[in-house]
Amino acid sequence: MAIPHAEHGLDFAFHDIVNLRLRTTDPRVHAFYRREFAYHLNDLNGCRSDSPVISLDISRDSRVTGDYTRCMHKVLASWAQMVRITENGASISVNGNTPSIPIVRHVVVQAIMRYKAAQRGILMLHSGAISRDGQSVIFAGKSGSGKSTTTSLVLCTDERWTHQADDFVFLRPGPISLAYQTTLHLYWHSLAALPEMANRFSHWERHKLRLFSFVRKISNEKIKWPLRVPPERIWLDRAIEDVAVPAALIYLCSDTTGKPGLQPVAEPESVEDALFDMNVNEVGHFITIAKNMGLPSNEELSAWLTQERQLLSQLLKEIPVYELRFPPRNRAEFTRRYVVDAINTLVKS
Image (cartoon, rainbow, N blue to C red; front, side, top):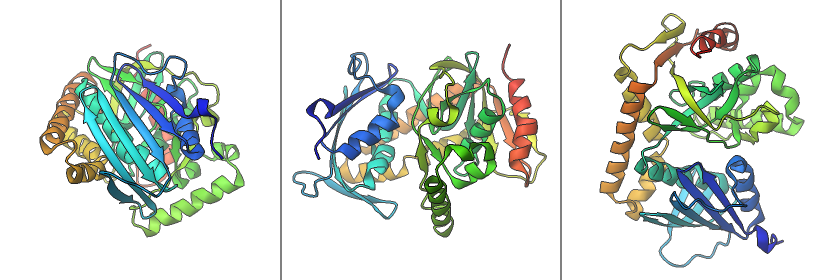
């Protein structure tokens, strides 16, 4: 059944950085993006005139004509896409199956948002972020280091903190962090560490989390399907701080052989390579697709990554950097008892 004509389009404004304009006749696509980017929905005012516009046209009609590139990701997702990137934005036409809906958002749409943000001097860093009293703490680290779990543990333990970002955060030199609100991407180990959250999930959702955990394990971390949940459902009525000043960037160390604790990093350059590689890995699939399409060109891709590296280097000079090393066991208890208090000392009263 087609959705009403008035609902064919959705406009999202991500601060003054980038706009996303969705056009679709598919109710599943419409519902997904409305839920995924609900916080940034700007239907009353439309796209901001002071920032580039990414136009996204998605259908699930298997018939495609024209200069489309066929793509696959994570076994089940399959789609064809045609991308045009201009100085003032980009246009993305996608025709894919149902599993491709969230994958296209992550692999293609978000990557082009990053590309346009970097051109405007904004870094989208793969990290979680929390804030209180106008100050934020950024949690960054390699895949599986526990960014989302650590963020959730702090939020559950100390209600003075609020959620600013789950997957990526906008960082502007100064420094400033800006909210990037999406659905929370939750995994079974996160729920296991947060028993107080269990009653906010249905029996079917808990079953899905167990199933996704099994798939992740047997695929050796290659297939990671999250359960997507609106943040307001978990964090209830906590107000979101749209803009904050980063009090710390905490690098989550995956090595548990050293002494557990939070330590300042005397030379931020020592974690710069790891953070940059982590960020590049998040757009690896898009870069492969882009090279096949020739859009952006190799020179433009190189310039993009160089710009992100320069922004990261500048931000690491402006934001105090710490390394958080966890014990080999009882990580959740360590976070609740030690990490929360340690983080609170970083925020100026």
